[in-house]
Image (cartoon, rainbow, N blue to C red; front, side):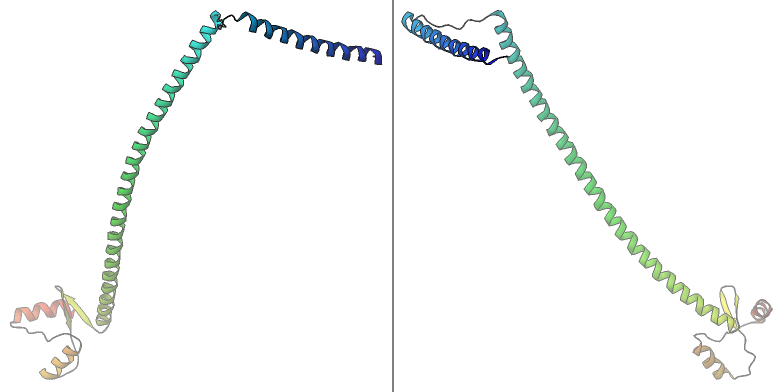
Length: 177
């Protein structure tokens, strides 16, 4: 392209712009002078577009209402489930505390039973014999009744009292063996 073509084109554009301006001015002057009422001209497709936009607006509003309803229902459901879970947590906490208390009591009882067992083991090591849920100790030492009683009391025991020969035989046979 050479420079003359460019200049001509620029001139053509300016001329075209001036022509458009003149035509617009001329049309406004004619419209003003004729004073015809301006009514919008609607084609068939304009009516369809209006109906479609109204339908779209109605559908949008219905979807919003449906969404709001769903949100309210879900919120109520989740609130109810949350309350149930909190109640379960509270119940489980109470049950856990009871189990901990029971565990502590059982531990104390176990320790006490261990202590008693150890005491009994020491007593059996010292020569105690068991017969019908009673414990007997036979001493090989010769002591009078008062000394024997004091000896037994020091070991948290007491002297046996045998009232008849059958009892003496039963105890002696069971324990002395």
